[in-house]
Length: 383
Image (cartoon, rainbow, N blue to C red; front, side, top):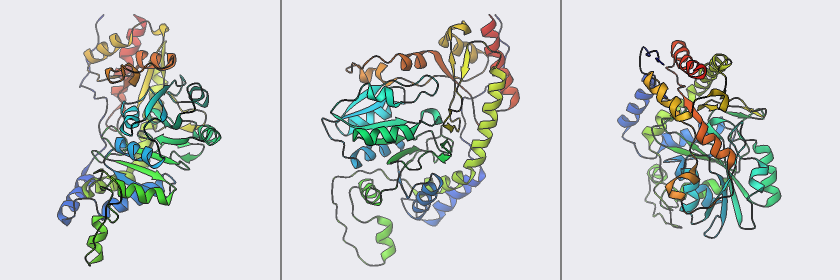
């Protein structure tokens, strides 16, 4: 079968960065304050407000955010933390950072997210916390998860790495969360290059998290500088170097101001994908859940038997046509790093990771690109 050549190579993602972000970064450099400082504080306050949280603590990545969140809720060696295997491996790795055991739970097929039922199936007396991922920006049904976690007496940490701009029950994802961890990696809608954030309504936790990200120090470098007087700092506990720079925060502030338009554009493009894929048998695209609205950070398609072509062959055909698609969301328990783990059966997780692929979706995608991508899939399905 001949695959029609694409007019240009279509990338799977591109960060939505422009002149405003470049100018903001340059201004931070010219200011002479490039490490964690006033722009980080401004970004923390603005981002927390945007997701309906009282406090934001900027850190170096979502992975470090998850690590500190688990410390804050008291997870220790010997504890178990329930996580989805269907997630980037950092979710499970953060559990190992604190010496605890990650316990993999299955997910529901339509959203790729944990449910009360899948968590309860693997819960034990050693369960200290659950990390619920808002997978690919699709909001998990956290109202039910929070109620169940309260009933069980376990902490619910939300991995909102992909979910900036997503909505759950009419409120931003992150609103009301015990602790939520965010990513600003270039694949995310809001990027600072690298970087992350923890949001919480708990003032004591926020204060401790700020210490932990800065070596356990009881007063920040910015506060010492602002005082004008010598301050002898103390190091209250073993901490980490998980800081964000003012250069990153300057970019983040610009990106945050553009987040609404970025989400709206992605949702328009996703809606057009849905229209185009309607007649492609066996290609089931991700959609909004009944309880919320996704930012479509990731647009994945699940291939069923009706499609008639395997996922890997489909990826190869798309690549030959100039389309940079990707395999679907990984399953951590299938990676060599977790070969020593014997989880309970995870049939939905394994089906999604085996049979799904991620299609290009970004600010530079045009309708001709979408026509070409779906046209390639349509021809494969009819083969």
